[in-house]
Image 1: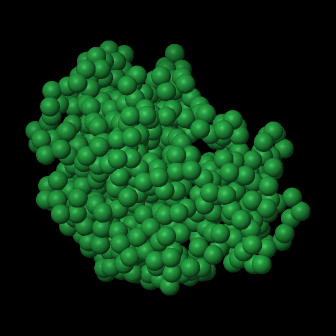
Image 2: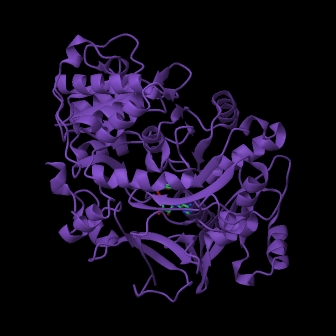
Length: 555
Ligand code: J2J
């Protein structure tokens, strides 16, 4: 299938509006990068422990890589599943694909057979790009298994392939500087309305759905998110989140930095020791993190101090709700400015602005990056708009929010309204100043005897306890009340906490009694989803398993 056939187009008159407004430039991401590479030719574009490449050098390798892909028989509109660790070759390969209209499908390093098989078949991929092995997992063996059972996969492109293998292609060789053969190759150029990249829906239920982002809409996403983060030619952007995730890829992230003339620094791990060292060594000005990572950075800084981070100008935090308490600690401790980012691979990006009052930066998840973003906050059951300032489910449409998932009519019927709004499933409240406060997800509420409790509200309160490092509140099935509040907590080293103390803290905070946790489980760590958010589904399953086990015992 041609990718365009699986997408839901924006209506023609809306396309016209976005074009007229200059939001859709009719320019491909490849052209945008080529232009930046021309303007900033001698500046450093990409640095890690092994390489340091100028814009001219990256551009040369991108053109060469694109030519080699075409030479191998890949064609515009072919899909390629990309599962790479944070590494400079990710950038060259991605730009090469964008250059000629090969469409990368952005898998995450944590994906395994179940997800990859789905991605390969849903996208009808012709190639897989993987490391040979990573953290003890044999990705190459899995890639061979997938190819053997896939009717579409031909090429395995492998990173770290030290001894050349007859059935694989070396990614490093593909990304080598140009040579005589590549320099004479004429390359195809995609249309700006074509699909540029497939992102994955972040949903923790079911398998990820594919989100087709066009050159027009994704460039718009990058162009709109760059000024609010003050990304420019002096930006040195550290990537520790998985590079294929929308947040570090394009909000404004890797691509935003590269279009501005800045420097991208990929790093394989967000562990504080490594991140702090990289920030100091490279003079990092911008980076993005999820709240759980920020918590670990704060802990590390409590011992080591914030000195290594003195070059930081902007710390973007998003992906999950940053508790107000954590936000305050970031604002107090970190050099530079905190920017909360409430975004989604489906489109809409909200950010706090760098000159917002502290109260906005700490207490909200920001506002849309475009005045063309349309937002509706509706009642979960009636679907009608709630009164201004009341919480409800956020719906959105706009110039960088596609109107449907790729080739998924059933999911689209559930996740999009007939008039093209994406149903985010996030419960938000919009303040009079336009800023959104994320209060939970429609699935992340606890209904205790008819009282709806936002799990995130409970967590925010729990973060007021000095002993708590990480907290997650989930619904625990209960005979009479339906559900009660179960709190999972990771404590700071050497700390103790019991349920009575938690409840007492809620009481002294003046919180309605029904919100007090009914159970406390202290744990060493919380399960995380593949992008590093707390995996509530896993916690709920754990509770359900424990309940069945105890029922069995009491019988
Ligand atoms: C609460 N929930 C948040 C936030 C995302 C930038 C930042 C994040 C993502 C992302 C992204 C949240 N507070 N600050 O793509 O470009 C939850 C919401 C949302 C879902 C989207 C970006 N920021 N979330 O996380 O597609 O529930 O994108 O709908 O992975 O994460 O997840 P995802």
